[in-house]
Image 1 (tube, rainbow, N blue to C red):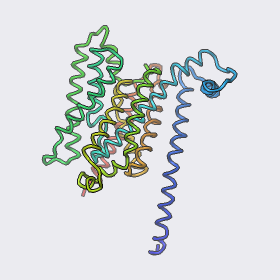
Image 2: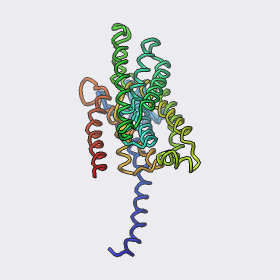
Image 3: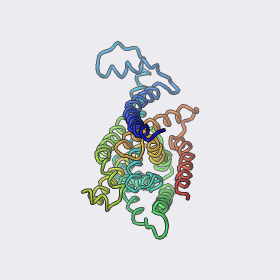
Image 4: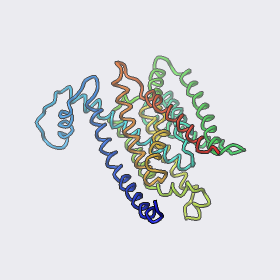
Length: 353
């Protein structure tokens, strides 16, 4: 290839890539709608797609009922709030993970590895122990996630270690400490009244989904998402380092505090309504980054939609694969662990001389 042809083909290839990336959002939106409908129709009591669509349309216009009363209950009371909760949770976790990775300039950071999810779980179980299930769980999960992140940042020091390794180790320490305290809470919890609910909640499941819980996670996730997506260009600047960010007119400390607060809100909302669900906030942002690159203006929307799709699929499989429902946290761990191992190996290989 001559130099002239390379100069001509370069912009052409870049233009084709931009068009492909711009088409990715509509494709992911269509995929999300598809998996939502598939999840609502599938299960131990299958509901035909045309019946599901008729039930949904009947909320807005008058249609002739073609569904049975049982199908109406299954769709409106059981499955619809569940699949929408799974989509909201997946979107919030993936978006939060992508933001945390950008803030700390570390692709191996996520709600699990940095201790936020463990802190939220600790705050949640303490709230359940003393206050029972309710709004207190959301408040406790938020406070726990925030305190865990503060502890990680306080412990995090380079001290001869690479910044990435230091941050991950700080997250491991905080997560282990929170896990120990969660174990202590479950040990002292009343085995007749409190313990069964705590254990079921910790496993991570959408089986107890309701419209009330959907409203809670939707409000928190949408508010946090507006903040994170609205500041996505600032994350690009923050990822350059504090000195460069200040030179470009950005206040790193203020913006980082706002974004970390937003991630805590999204993570704690998910933990409050469905327990601890791992790997979504770590794996999905990395997969999205492999597709669209590190520009957070494109990365965050793509990761959000991919997270929603992934968790809806995982939740559907968790309730349909076996006669007894598998906690969705187990499914995400089975899928996420080997992918995380691959990412670790890939990260190490990229730094090898």
